[in-house]
Length: 231
Length: 230
Image 1 (cartoon, helix red, strand yellow):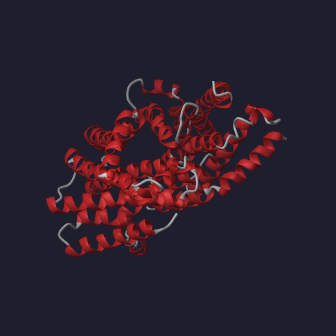
Image 2 (tube, chains in turn red, cyan; image 1 turned 30 degrees about the horizontal axis):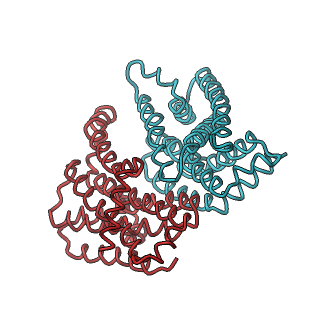
Image 3 (cartoon, helix red, strand yellow; image 1 turned 120 degrees about the vertical axis):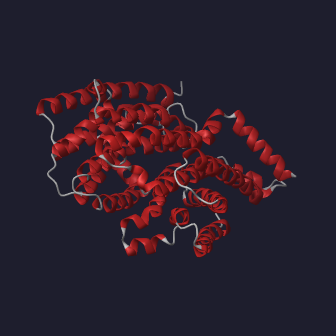
């Protein structure tokens, strides 16, 4: 009950605070921007240079899908860093809700939004066909990815500047989604360890049951230690 | 002398905060990607990469630096030290520009083996970096937290990045050269593909003049809104 009350207050805070509202709408802006690029820039580039970007549709879809949890995770991470700087995190630890539920609350909002935006991005972009079950699984993985990114930022960065440095580095995690494009065996093998690799892998190989298990294991291997880490 | 000391302490701060470490990783990733591109695309792709990341790193980082120093109260005691606001800003801009230059050169050297006009390359990166760092100071003046800063960066990015597509060429697209980011990108591309000396000199002069005017404006905003919290 306390959890629901706090979640409701969080949603209210987001609606009242224009900055937060716009930040949470930013994924929609990204989706719209990419839709516009597909509509206008792709044919323009093809006409000018003969390069058809849509040849890499599954990778473009992976990139946009990965941008959403990346953005939401970083926003949540900075919200938590701000709360920590203002000792709000400590304050919650002496309330009935406790520090743990406060963090669950913050992360659940990010995860839910990531889940919803995955569907929106997929249906708006219409880049590559993915079975319904696969899309549901992808949405779940991307939700957990937003939490992973928020936790990496929150637990890794001591202050805002370090947070920005980490955010810069975290942005590059999506490079592993394109590992197979480089045709370098060692790079692909390293990429197996990163959650982002499995997003594009599942999009391209949606009929391979083993890829679902492997991707789930990799995501859990990142998520569980981060959740249990004390800081 | 005060600027030199401030500059070295800013470089040390950036080192401690991991700016250099993260850019070593960034350089490595970009170099791997760029080395896979065909020889006819690689030089242009390198110029675009340098322009879109290391050249504008100041915009990304300066907000956090100012927000942190504001939170720690460093900026409010600035008035009681011999260091002037002008020197404080200059040292921050210089430190971030040096990082931008080092990373840009590293990416350029490791990615392609074509002839590059290094002087033009260095000047365009330095002018782009200082311009965007000053934009960052102006944006951070009215922000309360990093999330707000990142949000306010978006209109600036749209304003300065979207017109760069004009370099693809269409009737009257040369008019867009008045936008500093377009002029800087034109110079950077020119460092690889060649540019007439007259056009390069005019654009460099134009960007230098804009940077000077922007520095004066940034200083005013910084003193009013950040130091004296007007």
